Structures are given as C-alpha cells and as structure tokens.
Figure (cartoon, rainbow, N blue to C red):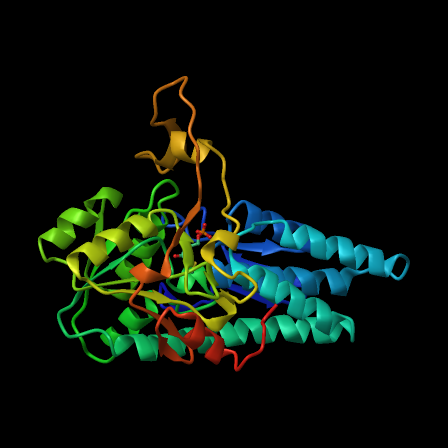
Length: 352
Ligand code: MRU
C-alpha cells in the first residue's frame, strides 16, 4: 500500500536483513526497522515492532531463513533446531507463525537458498490470499454500508492489503461508498492507532469508537456488518481474535447483524479441534496500566492511567464460538464456520 506516495509492504527481506515498518512507532512516526539476524527478528515479533497474524507469519518465516543463511558448519543441526525453537516461542496464538516456520525449516533442509525462497513464497502468497479475500468479501458489502471492525487486520497485519480491511479496500476500489467504525482496541490500541492510520491514508471515511460502544451503535442500527480478522481458527470454526471480539460477536448476534471473519486458510489449524485447544497469549499488565503517546513537542511519554497500587491482567485474545460467526471469508471463498466446510477447504489434508 502507499505511504506518502511510495509503495510499501509491511515486511520484506533485503539480502539477509528483514525490513519491517515499525508498528510501535505508528501512527506518530513512520520508520522502517532493519533486523540483521534471526534473534533480532524474534525480538521484533515479541515486542510487536511487527504484529498481526500474517505479518508475524512472514516475520517468522524470514527469521527461519535468516537462521539457515547464518548457520555455522559446526553444530549446524543443533543451531537450526534451537533457532526454530526460539522463533516458535516468540508469540503463542497466531497460527501463521507456526505454519511459516515449519515450511521454511523443511525447505532449509534442502539448502539455505530453498529456505530463503520458501520464506519469500509465503510472503507472496500472503498478498495473493489477501487480494482474494478482498474480492470475495467485497461481495458482502453494499454501497453505503457501515462496517464495524475490531483491532487491525489491515495491510499492516499482513504483508500487504490485509484481511478484514481487504473487502473494504476492494469495495472502495470498485466505487462503493463505505464507512468504517474502528474499535479503539484497548489496551494496545491497534484500532485507534493502526486501523485508523490505514483508513486515513486510504481516504476512507471512519470514526474511532470506544471499545464499549458496540452495543449502543448496533442497537441504534448504525452497523450493517462486522468484519474482523483471526489469529487462529479451530477445525470447528471457533475463532481466536483480539480480546473483545467475543463481546462484539454476542452483541451482533443479539441484534441479528452478520459477523464475518476474514482470514487465509493458513490461519486455520485443523489440529485444534475446538477453540479450547487454542493457546491464549497473556501479555504484560503494563499494557493495561500505562498508555503512551506524543506530547505537544512530539516526544513520546508513557503515563499511568490506572489507580496506583492496583494490578491488571492482560489476555491478548479471546475465542469466539462458531455459533456467533456468520461466515469465514477465505482466499478460496466464503464458508460457514462448520467442520465439514472447513475440512473441505483442505480436501481432507491435515495442515499440521
Ligand atoms: O496482538 P496483535 O496485534 O498481533 O493481534 C493480532 C491482531 O491484529 C488481531 O487479533 C487481528 O484482528 C487478527 S490478525 C490479522
């Protein structure tokens, strides 16, 4: 997507370095971070310099490729197995991370060049899948629709174009008039900071809303459709996404408003029978207790926004049961969140 008139991907490789838009500095500062080795790329996933299921997947694949490119001759196998272990321990919930590491590791057993090419292919496929999701998803959107989205599943969460925002981008490209309600998505504010920045950049009309405004908006008939992304989808359609998605889903069902999950098949994990098998990441309580942003001089300050002395918990994701989901928009088409339809996508193959 374009930033200041220049085409960017969220993450890419230049030689043996991984380049990524620093999402911790957005929307206040646009900065491209260079990671020269797999350990730094792991740090970037952990500290969310890069984030979002598809971008994490690409980053993990690139990190594995970096490890193959740097592997010493002596104790090579041990080095690579340790590298793999380090990468898969960066974040637990997004399925794409594990999917990408496995594919690149397998390719790397042939040669480092094969690992590099496989990582690049994962990134290219991520973009192609996002475009296809945009095409299918746009068929659900009518001219004038008001769409509510939670968190950021736009191009910043993938290599380019995104998933939940892809149908919106495609609809606008097709000449439809679309309005987006952007949940702020506490505590890290991926909606208020990243989705709003993306939509503003693309000239798409939107408003940021407090996370607890959903029921009010829906009861006042101001939402036609909800579209969110996914971090992992179980075989029965239960879907892990950013914390708060479950609440929106219950409210949407109550008011009879459709909720679609937009995600590539690389986010579906057939080894998770139900959502109960999905590991939910718990992050630092500081993300809840503190907020940061620029003061008038532009300097980023961190301030406490909760009562001193109180502690917090910070589950990063929740699992929306399939019964609250109207459909899943994949790169292969739109399906019901049902085991039979999901299994059909893989033609019986288990993507373990
Ligand atoms: O913790 P993050 O920012 O990596 O969370 C992932 C997300 O951005 C969301 O849950 C998103 O809706 C799905 S990922 C495309």
